[in-house]
Length: 302
Image (cartoon, rainbow, N blue to C red):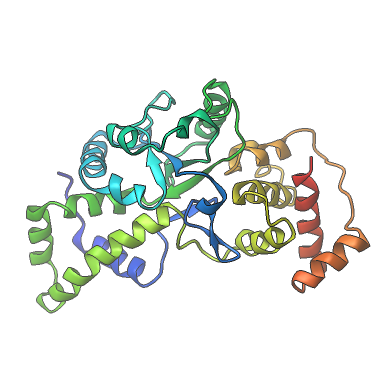
């Protein structure tokens, strides 16, 4: 087992149950767009790929056991079907539980793919490897470069702590190490923190970022478009406004947004009066927001 920092873990647990996020990034199957969960745009669950390439061996052993014995069914009911964790090589190999739970015909067509990567440990070249590997796959599930894939980053240290606290001995030792007046609170907060973390992995508690707010507006204008396609167009629109060092395919959380790294400067179209009238009928928008959403809408049709 890995020694737990009791004070840091307890503080993090309380912050997460109070509303702080433990994972963030592109939409997941639980992300709600105009009141509808993103998994409702797809037939069957999304494919979840957890990247263990930057996870230390001791952490990996703890997490693999926890995923196999405890968390995988909880993620499945959250519409995420897991493959075996990614290592140095990137390939899709479903777990035995995933194979048993896989709906008929599920891997015979492209599916949304959500890569879960350790926050702060994923170097830029790793994202390029995701792109290259998924684009090379010649199986229907990945759609030979299917654009419906994205990245969410999670707090690996806290996830390891949660996984260890699933063990009765570790949980008792942790409980004995905190202030006796807080032990009852710990008993209540531990399952709540785990549920919140799993919800964060699938995007059910995502933050209200500028992208998330734009997603609502763009979705209202294109109600049939998949949330990942909407997010990709918006991310590309936002990426155009970043500094040159940040405006690369490596910063992108969706496959489409990497296109902003090619052939700069891009020729931008100004928002048309017709689009402005249609968008303002959905929600009042500032001129800068309106132009950004117009660009994203334009990108959806390319």
